[in-house]
Length: 442
Image (cartoon, rainbow, N blue to C red; front, top):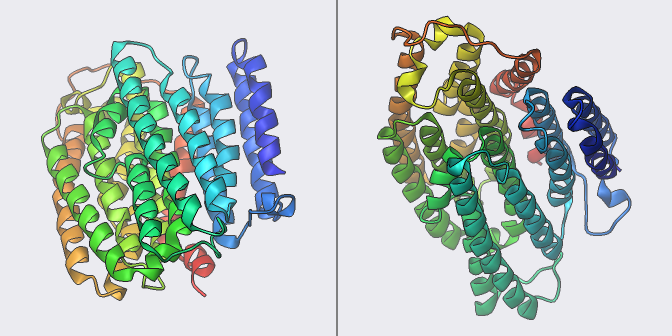
């Protein structure tokens, strides 16, 4: 029912957003609010269709997605107005993806989200945006081909696509799963399938980058864990070797690359890739009862903080032409509120206590410790310490350097409200962990 509400709203908003974007934004926020009510009322797709189930953990994840997209809607300006309807369709498909219990449906919905992501990045204003959009499209097309090839092979060896009934044994089954995961790694920006994201996140419209890197990646993270959990549990040693290796390579390479970047969006792009590496730790630690809690916590925290920093960066780019780290000099004096929002979310990405980023890392790392993967957690801790270096450079420019430009930066009330919503989520999940553990632990 909630998905239907979102689709209807997505069809209605284009009628209004060209003449009055405020009406379109109001329709979108209302639809997100109504969908949120229906989700927590237990009215999921499983009530009407086979192959879907709305559990407590999925309710929480869907609620976070809807709240985040509502906050993004409030922050949109005239140029980004087409994103309103695109986000409504995205949320409807995302809810179906999170609720599905069928691998075939998972792949179909996964590809549907991929198509919407291509439309999101096609919000082109200049050659720089166009280059990023093309890179995202090519990478997505390659990933889709790989995933579909793996699914075709899997269909020959498994008697069922239901998560609880699919085959987990056999050489060809493992090959098929490996091929599908290789394609999914493109979407999760895992090294060496990360190159497109390092450029695309920095080059496309920053609101689209916020949705692509913050919202979509987190949704795929949770849905993928649920889809492939039985395979990981059946081969825990293989899970440690594969996911542990890619976690180490991804977080280490991305953090070192971020150290040398001068463009803010490029730093955030590599930071996003590094966080994908941290998020693989619970996959490797699938034998721990805290593995799913680590995945869900990381996805929820990441949605709030990653979406917020790219939205702030979009405001800074549009209103003040800020693109490089040195352009941030004196931002704390030019616009204290934007500087505060940006700083807190950067601290959360760095893993500072009392913020969601710290608690999500703690949950993910604890799953690794519980599974006996001390070496992997130690490497992740060292990488977290390394990442602080480039985050500190950003904060230094904001508060300790003299402003290059003396004029103040004005922002809309919608942007301030949207940022307050995201900030509230970062603080809430940085202090209250019971909601996540209660829905993931038996």
